[in-house]
Length: 203
Image (cartoon, rainbow, N blue to C red; front, side, top):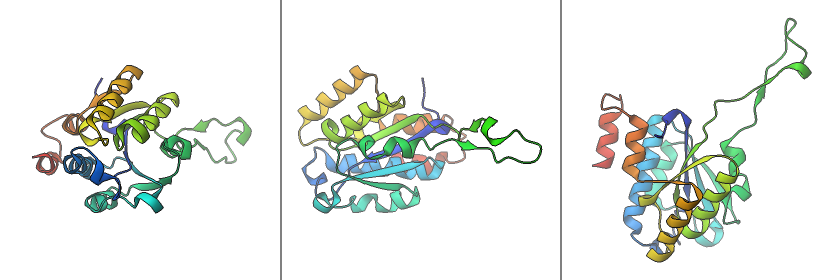
């Protein structure tokens, strides 16, 4: 199964100023998060950013700022490690809309709700992989989303913790992917109108 751009949403977890310096390969991880956000902006993919206890850990790193703004990302502050505990699922799956009645339509109580187009494939990346990212991913699975974790845009303070998170996520049914896998699956074709712009981001 390939990622479908029309069914995808992007969630970037806790790339914060007081957290990232302690992460393994932090510069490369941040660079890949920026790429994901920039491509989401170009392809009009809904994007969300979480910040864990921002009064203590600070806001998202400066490198992400322009990409977050371009993607028009919604920022969710949280205290729980899982962003789902703070309402992320509701943000990702808005309630269905009900048709407005008119003189020739059925009474409102008999109308079927009109669901917005469902974007059930959640592309997830962030820190720390074995804490906030892991708990968010597992809760999203429980809420019946398809979860795709971008491994080269994730980190922890140690490689052991990061790799243990990936092992557990794979066992739970999460798809483990890389930034380039995501980007090229979103485009599907070298004739995509944004191909040159996106290619320049990943070179």
